Image 1 (cartoon, rainbow, N blue to C red):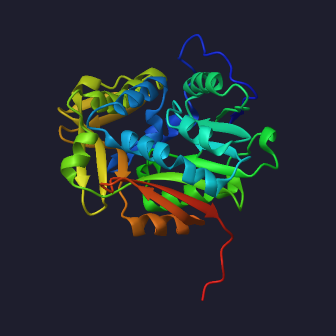
Image 2: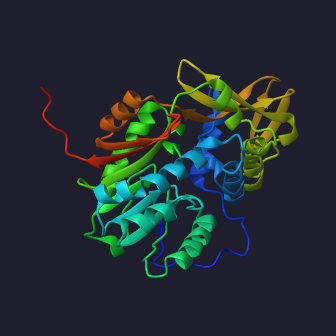
Image 3: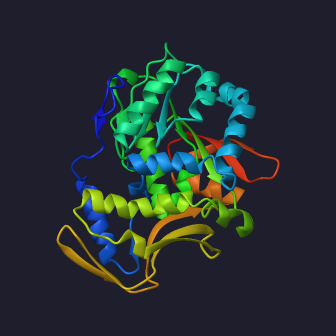
Length: 329
């Protein structure tokens, strides 16, 4: 983890030593059956930029709906949260939704956390121009684990911000573990404003992850480009295609990279072979009904206290509070 007291200038180039955790996850994931690589590794610089393009696509409704909810209900959120909190955003990306929240809640500081360091620093610098009096303390880290927060916000009440339905990328056990890690990061008595996508027709869901322009396909395939760039690999990217499917049993959209022909490749000296039609599972996007969302939050030690959704019930913003566990009856 890197604790940066001030936003710093972008690096002169993007190439850096491969993250050992990335290497370990790729090798373990390709050795597993079925093959799978965790979705968090999408977000190198190229992946982060592609995802920002996805959020502007006509098929991708979550960003538009969530941004509208933040704008429409910012006053209600501010009344419940109160002024003077440190806003800690998990997986901040470009922080495009964040200004709606910061303008409403009168924060004492803003701490964006992201795994993509260069992207984090650039977005922090851009946000600082809009909020010149607000202390902004970016932290480069994997938010899946408890994080030691910067000394700058010691003693301040906290509001966690986790927009975008990123929680849906995780299976239930991992999601619960993350929510509990957030309690450790933020502390009991903290609040969490989280976005959760609703279950809806596959006719709406699948195009959101398989757009007509092919941006989501490029985002998925960039994972293979990253493996080649960072892990001295020779994966034939042109031998794979993007697939998005609705899995009704698990209430999720799945993204896969499917081999279109028999392929062989090497990653850090390890040999791999895949048959035509075999896939690498790269992402889940779970969708939740209202009760499902509340159960998940309570399992993660967060008690829901307010909820806002759009007129079509496509997406929900939920405000929850970290409370100590009660005595079960």
